[in-house]
Every structure is written in C-alpha cells, then in structure tokens.
Length: 291
Image (cartoon, rainbow, N blue to C red; front, side, top):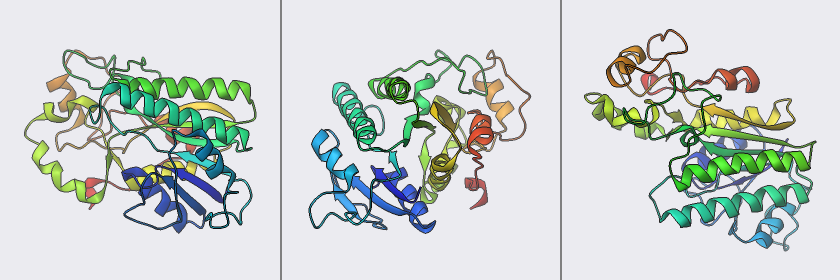
C-alpha cells in the first residue's frame, strides 16, 4: 500500500490525509476539481461525475504529463470527495453529486483492479442533528445505533454504505472501509471552542463531537493496512468532546431521559470509537485540550 489516490485531497480532511501519507512515505495523487492550498503531492484535475475522467485517473495511464504515469495500478483509493455537508447547495444537487461521484469512484476502482477503498461516510447517518425533540436512541452512540438519515447529504452517505456492501458482494476479495467522520477540525478551529461553553445546546446536534483532521488522517492510514476483507463502517471521532463540562453533565442537562450504555467518565466522547480502536487500531493523538 504505497501508491494511493486521494479524491477530494484539496478539502479540509483531504489535505490532512495527503500530508500524512506523504510524510509517511507514500506516493500520493490528489484528484479534485481544484488544487490544494497545501500542495504536498501531485494534483490531477478530475470531475468525479464524469466516469471516463475517473477511469483515466485511477488507471494512471493518461497522457505523457500524467503525474503518476510511472507507477502501476494504485494500491488503494481514499475517497473523500463530496459536497461535505447539508445546506451548502440545494438538496438534489448534494444527493446527485455525492451518489454519482461515489459510484464512479467505487466502480472505476474495481474495474482497474484496486481492491481496497477507504472512504468518508459520516456521523450524520446516525440521526444528526440530534436535539431534545430528535434525541439519539442511547449514548454513547455506536455503530449499532439505528441509521436515521435526516437530509439528502446523510442519505447519500447511508446509500453509499449500502453501495459498498453490494459492490463487495459482487467482488468478495475487496475491502470497503467507511469512516463515519465527526465534525472535522483543524488546529486553528480550536479558537472557536471558547464561544461554545456557555450554551450546551449549541453543539448538541452531534453530541459535542469532533475529529482533529490529523487524527482523521491517522484513521485513514490505519484503514489502508488493517487485515480486513469486506465492507464495514467505523465512527471516527476524538476521544473527548468540545465542551469543558463533563459528558455526564451534558447528557443530564440536554438529554436526561436517554439511556446510557456505560458510566461516563470525564469528557469522554459520546460518539463511541471502541470499534475503530479494536478493529483498525485507531487511537486519537490530538485534542483541543492539549494545544
């Protein structure tokens, strides 16, 4: 797993993934519609809604100026390209873009012989935005929580997970690892956290979760190498919340009637990462508390 294509490598999480992979000795190609503000690896402009362009990018056999022409078939694809959240564009645009681009990447990867796909699903598949009128079924929320997409964006991620399951069924020697990413934060974003502390309802929508972009990159790297064949999904969050109040206090104040699956300690995450720890070997290294 040394030659990696990253789709959406110019985005917030994608930039961190590309940098982490390059710093760990990988050959990386960023395919996106615009160059990265952190150009650590070759860039190839690709419209992922155009299947022919995706096939060309993943075959690495484009024209003489193709940045990775010297390599064979990529070892893996990291698919992070998408309209990254609800309400950025009309719902039908989000749904169409995310579904078609994901299909094109998955299908082109399989047709070009790539057997490992690590891709960005989302915490939103689990019922976000949570609120007292739309609470989680229990906490900490884990991968067994009911899938309850509430927007075209989260529905596209839910159906992306189903697409991965069916494509793996067609190709039993493949690996589709979906990372249900929490709200991605870069170090400069931590300056905003102080303004959230007086009102726990401000961040109730995802149970006060977040993922440091650098830990997101770590999860990708672990997923590239884990001994796994199949299609499965993992919540990827930091191991703490964005709040100074304890997790137990937050739940008692905002979701007092929601059953707890365990006794909560300190600021521990309410988006369980136990499965990611156990299967992927993921372990967060960064926190807004340790800047």
